[in-house]
Image 1 (cartoon, rainbow, N blue to C red):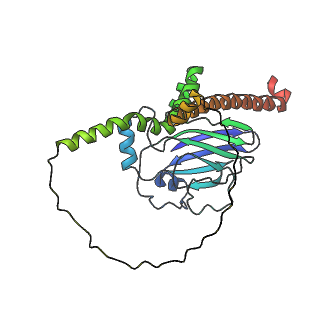
Image 2 (image 1 turned 120 degrees about the horizontal axis):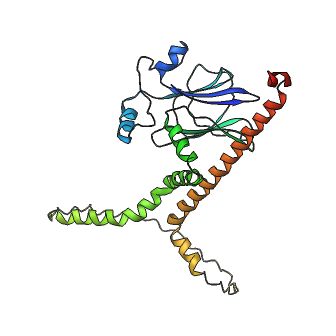
Amino acid sequence: MEIWSLDHPEYGLIEVRIGFDSDFVAEDPSWPGEETTKTGTLARADSSLVQRAKLRFHNPPERMEVRVAGEVQHRYNDVNSARLPLFGDGAKNELEPPVGLGTDRQKPHLKLQANSLDELLSVEFREGATVVEFDPPAGSRGARRRESMESSELKRTLIPMAEGLGKGGWALAVLVLGPLFSRLIGWLLGLLPDWDLPEWRLPQMDLPVPELPSVDLPLPNIDWPDFNLPEIPEWMAWLAEYSKIWVPVVVGIVLGLVALRNHRRSEQEKAAWQDNQAATQDPGELTD
């Protein structure tokens, strides 16, 4: 089981637990999953892409559970990117889809980021403007991502930027690979022999057309003023023509800068928590 955790000074220990039905039913026999007899293996940080794809294909569905101070808040039937409310309504006898539509961003909630293989990469606690990052479990894909980002300030910006480009990179792929693919299709079609296919003709049918009465209404003649619109600059015309290229790039840059800002906010918030905890401790305990 993979457990992401954050010790909140007000709400207590917040956990995001990922595993399979067999893992959860071993802790709680009332677990509502239906595939409790099937076991699976979660991908690790050193797993290759081929190994991760095989695990994704052979494993039973991954489940996710959110706990606050040891109390179950939500149980989800899948793992993917979403904004999820932190506190539940007490209905834990079924698995919810992790959609998160309509989550109030001013209230405590979690922001989850997963990749295309539904591997959890990051978890953030959010409440209004507060952003605090969870600690990823050791050996997980999220821990490897965190280690890469902590190795340099440049990677901390470039990795989210690359992930943002990946979300809009399909447009670049279509524009770059589209002409090559069309040429390949044309070349393959040129290798096929010419077949004389029979001509099919639909029977001709003369259907009656009703004659509608014509109404001639005099329309007023309005002299509209002439508008001389300014010519569009060349750079604006280029942006309009190639928006599918530069928009994903701008999105990636913005996501990278936002991720860097959120990390700094997270570090500042954690430092404030530690200062408040140290200030509330008994001075006698500090001297023991």
